[in-house]
Image (tube, rainbow, N blue to C red):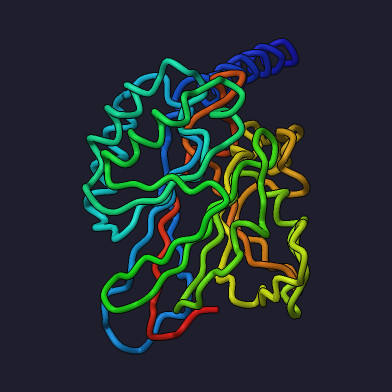
Amino acid sequence: MGHLTRRRFLAAATVGTAGLAGEGLGWGPRRLGFSHHDLTPRPASAARPVRLIQISDLHLHSVGAMHRRMADRVGRLRPDLLLFTGDAVDRADRLDTLAELLALLPRVPGYAILGNWEHWSGVDLGALEALYLRNETRLLVNATVTHEVRGARLVITGLDDLAGGSPDVARALDGAPDGDAHLLLGHCPEQRDQLPATAGTSTLGSLPAPLGFDWRRITAMLSGHTHGGQVKLGGWAPVTPPGSGRYVEGWYRDAGQVPMYVSRGIGTSMAPVRFGCPPEVAVFDWWPETRAG
């Protein structure tokens, strides 16, 4: 009986190890999920929301079946706006691959920011910006724009990357207009800890005079970078990349700070492995009737 038990244990261990390897190296990195969030409270009316879809950390080397499924579902979700939050490519010779993917996505307006890998890998940023523009997407580097959709004004601020670039919050927000909602896009979530508190106005950066920006105007910050840890054991992420800070994935709504959502992203970095944190596309519904901010 003891021998049989040991054999059964060894068999179970073998199956378990194979399952972990299969999850981490095989279907885990391709098991894409879509998460859904309300940026503002859903009103009683049945009006259609403004739909924003965040695509983060593609780390695109080739366009595969998962990417085609993603593009198809994104189209069926009828987005009003696409938001690319950095690390679309991590090699300088992959812009043609990104062009292939962008051609599959719905032709709607978009905004993009840079991640650390666009900087570290020596991507031609001018060519990247031109590629985005050909696909109705504007690259924001320490800049703010106002996007009008169905009579509502969405203000979007895009920061340069914290780990690989030179984020300048003061420059990005100088003269930022009021809107019905305001999104801050920053690839590295640790950037949030360098923002002033939401309790009032603050002086930022090297401006000669107080900016006077009220951080309560920011509806949410959208980030990526962490890949959700890429490998999580029992819900714990042993390693996150520099620039992650204390953040891993999901919503962070600490009192006195800008609310932030950290996407697990889609691709992988350093090793083609995901375990316990499958790829993610985040879908945000904004209900202008509730006047976010």
